[in-house]
Image (cartoon, rainbow, N blue to C red; front, side, top):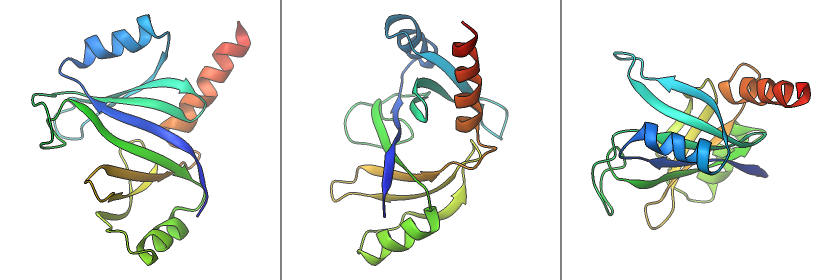
Amino acid sequence: MTIKRIGHIAIRARDIEATAKFYREVLGMKEAFRMHNLEGGKLGSVHMFVAPSNYIEIFPNGTTDGRGDHQTEVGLNHICFEVDDLAKCLEEVRGRGAPIDTELKKGFSKCLQFWTHDPDGNRIEFMELPPDCYQIQANERIAAEDAAR
């Protein structure tokens, strides 16, 4: 298994708009894209562009502090590693005895992913980026915008 890079670091925010504004206006990141939940179209996450294929993923609705439910806990949510061959990576991780929390599936951003966790319960996503996923589309759009300047 060869990890190409950290694909994104995901955090959960109490106020997603204020957090996105901080990363945009204070740290100078560009907003790459937003994803909405399939149910009801509510905002599911905001992705801030750090560098090609490197993002900060911000989730809404953080309400609790400390170790708790990853759906509500404010702070670090998970770390994501990008790989070239996700199916091979899954088999290697499984073969090395790691727990597999989800099998290979397509994520909301059209990426391919599976999930595991470390001995402390920190959630880890492995991701492969097909050409039609939001991350690749954002990389191309932002590169074109930067080249036009």
